[in-house]
Image (cartoon, rainbow over all chains, first blue to last red; front, side, top):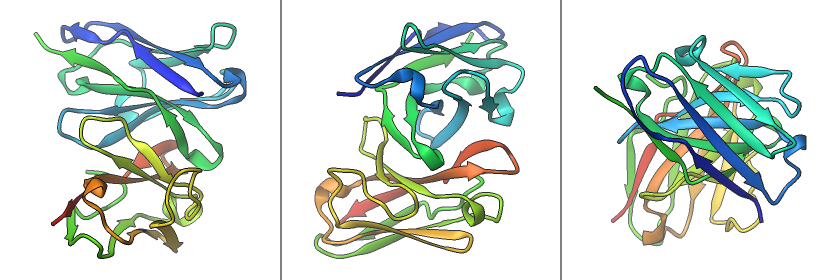
Length: 118
Length: 110
């Protein structure tokens, strides 16, 4: 059974940093693109970042470029999102998801809440 | 403002059919595959349709997808109260080099 479990969310002040983790199991992690998607309270979904199977390609939504960095450790079956210079508008539930071909997000974690507030 | 445009809400009676539209452009829907997601209250999104019109295992055939040009449509027949949820379309945008979603459509089964 495919499982994706996010962790690392919490309350952080504007300008601060946070590192999210996503533990994957039930599939061969190293053979799939992975994604981070977020959802602000009461709002819609927003694609945050994609990372290729071997980590050599990464894509980001414009609003996080230069501040967020997606990475992975295939030996540990883990996906990460390093978030720096956090803003109030980054407050959201962050989901990790497994990508299939042609950009379908097939499996999702339960999400972890990041709150940016003073 | 989302790159893909969906109606904020739709409604229909139990047993009826509803369609949800998703409009974009040549850099996204026009040249990439569309997916549809269902998000029940308080839960993570779930994939309903991929590759424009394919259903993952376990998704009933009451759900269907289609695409024409720069627009896509999700259809749901035999509506049930359990279908009340938010529905999102999503795809890749080749100009932005990023995934994009519609703003979401809230389905109410009256």
